[in-house]
Length: 310
Length: 310
Image 1: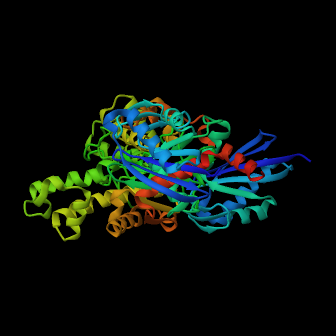
Image 2: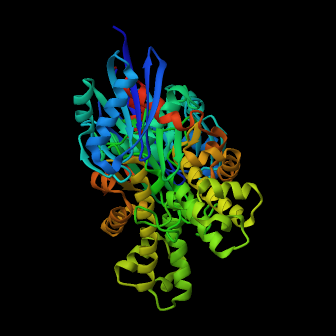
Image 3: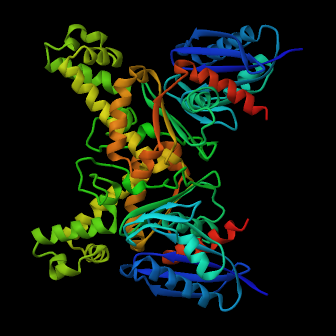
C-alpha cells in the first residue's frame, strides 16, 4: 500500500496542507482557521484536511507548523495568542484522530525548514530565514543544524531590542525589531502618517491602511508613505546587520507577507548590512527573498514529517 | 617518550601559556607581548615560551587563541588591531619554529572553549560566553557545537547595535554594545562624568580613570560613578537579553576584566534579562561570571590543541 507524508501549516487565518508520496506533492488544500470555536474544532478540521489529502493512502507521519510557545518533544502548544490556545496537546489529539504520528514545531522554524529543503536555502549550512508579517520570526540554521534551543524558543529575533525609546511592542517592551519593521508596525506608522498628512495617498482610505497599501503608496511616490517605508526598512536592515554580525551566515532569506515588496525591501536592507555589518560578515552574506512564499510553511511541514521518521 | 599539549593565549599585553600531560597542567608561564617589534619577534617569543613549557617533552600540538580576523583553517591572522598584524601566517611560522602543529582560533571563542571544557559551562550544550574588557567578544555554543561561521567571524556580539544614536564605537558605527558597556566605554563615561562633577571621587585622579576605578568609586557611593556604572550595566543587560531571546541558551557566562565586578555586574544584568527576556528564555537561562577568570584563554587553548588531534 502506498504511503504518504502530510505537511500542515496552521496559522491564525488559514490552515494549508499538502500530501507527498516519494518527495512529490500529490495534493494540496486550504481551510479557514475557526480558532474562535476552540482547539477541538480546529483539530477536527485539521484531521478532516489530513484524511482528505491522504485520499485513502496510509499516512506515515504528519508535520505541523504552528505559531506560539511549544514543547516540541511532548507535542504541546503551551500558548498561542494567534490561536487562543493554552496547553493544547496537539500531537496527541490530532494523532488520535488520524492514527499517525504528529510532529510539531514553531511556524517560522518550519518555514525555514521549507526554504532549506526545497527553496532559497537548499544545501546551505548557515543561513537565517526571517519572516516579516504580522510579527517578525525566524528560523536559524547553523552548521547544518536548525537552532531550537533547550526550551524550543530560539530564534525570537523579532524581540531583539534595537531602540529602547522606540514604539511599544505587542510583547510589552519598546523598540523591538517587530515593533519597528513588521507589517503591523508599517500599518501603524502609515495610519499615523495619514492622520498628519491629509494630502497623502494614505489619507484617502484610512480604514484600509495595511503594510501593502503603504508600500503601494510609497511606490506611487507619496512622500509620507515613502518616509514610513524608509524608516521601517532602515530598522529591518539594522536588525539584519546585527544578526549577520552575530551569526556570520552565508545567506539571509526574507519571507512573510512584507517580503512581497521584493527589491523595495532588499535594497535598503542590503544598504544597511553594508553600512553596519563587519567586513568578513558582510562579504560572506547574500540577502534575498523567499522562493516558496506562503507555501514555505507547508513545504517545511512535509520536511518535518520526513525528518521525524529518520 | 612523554608528550605534551601546549595552550597559548596571545593578547595585546601578555602571552600566557601552559603545558599539559594527560589533562593535567604541568607548567605555566607568562611573557609581555612586544607587538611593536613586529610579528617575527612575537612569534620567536611564543616559540621560546612553548619550548620552555614543554621542557624537553615531545610536543603533540599547540593551541593558540589570538584577537582579530582569522582564517582558522589556513592558520592565518588576516588582521589584528591589538597586535598590529596583517596576513601573518602564524600557524605555519610558529610550527616551523617548534616542529609541531599549531591550531588557532579567535581569543573569545578559545576562552569559551576553556569555560566549556573546565569552567563554568562544563557539560553545557547551549551557552554564551561573553568577555567584557577593552572590547566585547563572545564564544557561542549551540547544541554542543562552538559557533564559528563560514568565515570564522561568528559571535561578534560586541557590534550588535542597541542604540543607533549612541556613542561612537571603535568600529565606526554608533551605539554598539561595545561602545556602551565595555571597559573602554565605562572609562570614557567615567572621564566625562568627572569633567562635569568636580566633587566626584572620579575627579581626584582624572588620568587614572579606568573601568575598575569607576566601579570602585560607585562601590564607595559616588553618585556620578554610580550613574555611569548603572547606565553601562543596563546596556549590557539589554544586550544579554537580546542574545537570550535569540539563542535561548541555558547559561550565559560573563568573563573578561569587567566581570571582576561580580554581583555589581550580575544583579543589573539579571534584572534586565527578567525585564526584556521572553518567558521561556528567561526561565531557562542562568547568568553567572567566569570560573577561570583570565586563565580561560590558556585553558581553552589547551582544549583547542586536544581537539585538533581528534
